[in-house]
Each structure stands twice: as structure tokens, then as C-alpha cells.
Image (cartoon, rainbow, N blue to C red; front, side, top):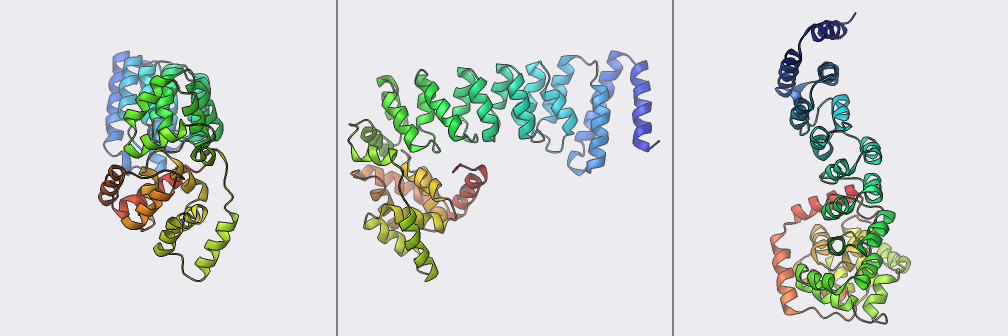
Length: 361
């Protein structure tokens, strides 16, 4: 018998012969021992702690398990078996901390729990810092209005195209959800058009107060007649093949630089401008186009800053990303202030995070 097996066997005997209070005392002691050096233990040691804690948590009252869950949830190397058992618990006071915080739970774990538990559990999952599209698909399908509203406000949540379609449909009868979706940076332009066109006057009025000045201007464009050119451009996919050929040639001759991007923007060569920026920051064209079409300038600002572009070029891009949209002086001043505040290093870190999250997907 190995040392760990011997420890477990002795522990089982102690638990069987001990009182409820003794088991609780042992659980707290082992938990504190683990937390004292959680980041320093290797996988074998963590597994042993997992076995020990697993035994000690049997036949323990919920409030003690809730205490354990709260302590282990922020620990990046918590035993997976213990974290999963706590996350599966029917009492939300026990499962909640794990579902909202634990990094050791996999997407598969979250999908399983989201597919079987109630709204309180779904609500806890919707608060996580990062949520994969596979998980949000389940939350969007099964979650009530409280869950999906909270999820739509979570900037760390990724959505599939199907998830966004479902959310947009639900937003037709949920004003709060419609507002949240309309200001999301990753909402596809076609769905933004549909969302705004079906929004109530109350929602449109509230959106106007929540959006930055340039967003308010574009919102008015979206609310104009269906023949409006800006609206048509947001709904119709563009063909970037010719532009990609042009950019390929510039890259081959080492001429793809800020001067080229500025020239494309000034000449109104929209496709070349987007493909050029995408190449400079090593991003999918789809992502850059989505950022360009967003009501806010934040996303395209980050992309341009991450590409090493300067204010004059960014200003030219702002002036040419929407046909028929004249940028006001107030919009330019706000954009310039935001541009100067953001450092290139910070923009690059933010952009890498977006790419890892799979925003373009």
C-alpha cells in the first residue's frame, strides 16, 4: 500500500469513528493546510489533498461546504474533483462561488452543469470573467431574463453566431436586453441593424443617452429609411478579395505602412483600409470590419493603436468608416482624447486578449 493510500485508509477510520464536529474541524484544518501553500504543491500532492477533502466533505452540512467553496473558488490550483463536486451541489450557496470564479472548471464541466441545473446556477456561471461560446449557447437557451441580461453585460462572454441570433430575437420583447446588446462591441452589424429597427422608442431614447456622441450619430443613421446607404452597407457583406490582392502586393514590396493606410482612408478605399489594418495587427479581416461598423469608436481605436498608427491616420479612418457620416468636432475631440490616453502596449495586450477570446468567431 502506498503512503497516500495509507493516509486515506487511516483517515476513513478516523472519520467513521468521529463526530460531526470532529469532521468539520478536520476539514477546516486540511483546508487551511492546503491554502497555506496551494501554489507550491505539485499535481500528485494536489490530488492527495483532493482525495482527503473529498472524504471529509461527505456528510458535512451545507453551510460548511459553502465556507469551503468560498475559500477554494479563487485558488487556481484547487483540486478539480473537489471543485467539480462543489459546483454540482444543489445548494447555490455551495455551488455559486465555484461556478462564478473557479478556474479549474473546464468548459465541459460548465456545459454539463448549465444543462442540468436551475436558474441560480446559470446566473452564477454568467458572472465568470471569461465564458466560452459553447457555454453561453446553453445559458442563452436555458437562462431566464435575469440570466441573459447579466450575460449580455459580461464583456468576457463570447457568443456564437447562433447565440447572438437567439439573444437578438429575445431582445425584441426585452428592452433591457436590447440596450445591453446594442452597445456590445462584438455584435454583428446585421444583427445590430435588426435589433435597432425593432427597438421601441423607449429603448432608442435610452440608447441615445448611453452611447458616445459618435454612436448617437450612427444610431440616427440606422434608424433612417431602409434605402439609407449606411444601413445597406451594414447589412450587405463586402468582398475583400480584390483588396487582399492589393495588400499582398504592398506587403511583398514592404510598402504596407501607415502612409498606405492613411492614403486608403483619405481616398475612401474602405476594403483596402480594413484589410491593411487587419494585416498590420495580425487580425482576421472579419474582426476589423466588425469593429469599424460598431456604433462606438473604442474597438477600432484599439486596433489602430495596436497597429502602431498615429492620430492623423486614425482621424482619417474615423472620417471614412461610414458612408455619408460627417464626424463632428465634438466626436473628434473625444476620439483624440481617448486615442492619446491609450498606450500602444496596452492596446496590443487588449487586442491579443480579443484574439484569444475568438471575438471574430
